[in-house]
Image (cartoon, rainbow, N blue to C red; front, side, top):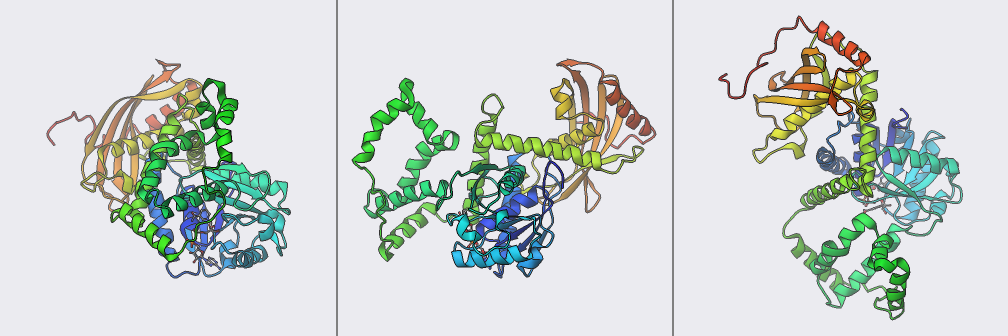
Length: 500
Ligand SMILES: NC(=O)c1ccc[n+]([C@@H]2O[C@H](COP(=O)([O-])OP(=O)(O)OC[C@H]3O[C@@H](n4cnc5c(N)ncnc54)[C@H](O)[C@@H]3O)[C@@H](O)[C@H]2O)c1
C-alpha cells in the first residue's frame, strides 16, 4: 500500500463479464485479488478476460506496468474478503441475491474494508438493508469493458458515510478511473437511465421495420457516437446551437420534444417474434465473428480513441484521454517508487533493472515480437537506468534529461508471445554530457540473449546539450567506475551490416 495505490489486496465477488473486468483492472495495476464465484467456468472466463485486458494494456500504454498482482480463486466469500481492503461485488442483478451476498461480505470482511457494488440500477439504500456496517457500502457502477472504460458512477445510499465516498474516489481514481459522484440516488443512476431510453427507442425502430440492427448501429457509430465519445451531449448541443449557443439550441429544438417524435416510455413487447428478428439480424451483422474476437476489435478501437483523446489539447488530454494521461503519470510515479525501494544493485555487474512479458499485441504477422517493441523494451530499460541515477519525468520538467542520439539493435532470436524477458544493462562509458549504454535482452527461462541494444544518450539542460547536474553526474560516475572492469559485451561497437 502507498500514497499512489491506496490498497494492496482486493476481493472480487462474482467473476462474470463485469467481475472479470474488475479483476483485470486491479491485477494490471499491481493489486492482489481473491475471487469467489461458484460457477465451474468462472476461472476460465476471468482468465480469458484478463488475457484480453493484458493484450489491450500492451497497446494502451508504453509506460512500464507494475508487477501484476497475484490472482487467486477461493471457495467462499469469507476466504475472498479475508485481509482485503477493498471488495467489489458483481453478482447477477437480483436484489435478494445481492442482499444475501452483501450480508455475507459485511459479516466476514475487515470492518474498515470498502465495499463497492457493480449494480446497474438497484438503489444503494436498498442494498444496505440489514448490513451491520452499511456506511462502507457504495454503488460503484462501471462500464464494460471495466479495464478500459474509465467511468465509475459512485452513488451513496442513506447510510453511506461521506468518508466512504471520499475513500472510494481515491481508490477508483488510483485504478485509472474517472469517479463521478451522482448527487441523489435514483434507479439506474445516470448512464443506464440514458441508455435505457435509447435502447427502448431502438427496439421500436426494429420492431416497426424502420431499419435493421446494422443500420441502427451505423447511424450511431458514423455520427453522434463519435461526438459523444469526446464531448457528451450538452457540450455537443452547445456547438450545434451555433454562435447563439445553448439558448438558441433549446429554442429551436426544444419544442420538438412536445410533438413527440419518440415512443417515450411505451415498452415494446419482447415477444418471440421480436427476439428472433433481433437475434437473426445481429447474427448477420456479426458475420461469423465470435465474442472474444469482437471484444478484441472493440478493445483496439477503444484504445485508438483513448490515444486520440490523450493527444488532444496539445497533449494535455481531453475527456477519457485525460484519465489515461493521469493514469500514466501515476504509473511513472509507481515505477520510480519501485526503483527507489528496490534493493541496492551490485554496480559491479550488469544491472537487471527491467523485466517484461511479450504481450499478444506486440506480435507481427509472423507471430514474433515486432521490431519496434524491441526498441520499446530497451527504451524502458534505459528509463529504469535513468531513474536509478535520478533522472525522471520530474527532473525533465525542471529542464534536465537525457535524449537518445543513436541506437543500434541486433535481433538474435525470434521472441514469442508470453516470453518473460529481462534486460541486462551495462555502462560502456559515461563522461560529461555523453552516456553510452549497452542492453542485452535475455529470455528469463532459457537465459539466451535474444537481442542487444547499444545507445548513445546526451544530457540536455533546458533544450541544450550540457553536463548533468552534480548529484546525477556523481551517481552516474559511481556506476560507470564500478563497471569499468566488466568485459566489453559481445556485439558492442558493431556497425550495421558488419559480418558476424
Ligand atoms: N454486463 C454489463 O454490461 C454490466 C455493466 C455494468 C454493471 N453490470 C452489473 O454487474 C453485475 C454483474 O453483471 P455481469 O454482466 O458481470 O453478469 P454475469 O452473469 O456475467 O456474471 C455474474 C457472475 O456472478 C456469479 N455469481 C452468481 N451467484 C454468486 C454468488 N452467490 N457469489 C459469487 N458469485 C456469484 C455468476 O456465477 C457469474 O459468473 C450486475 O449487477 C450487473 O447489473 C453489468
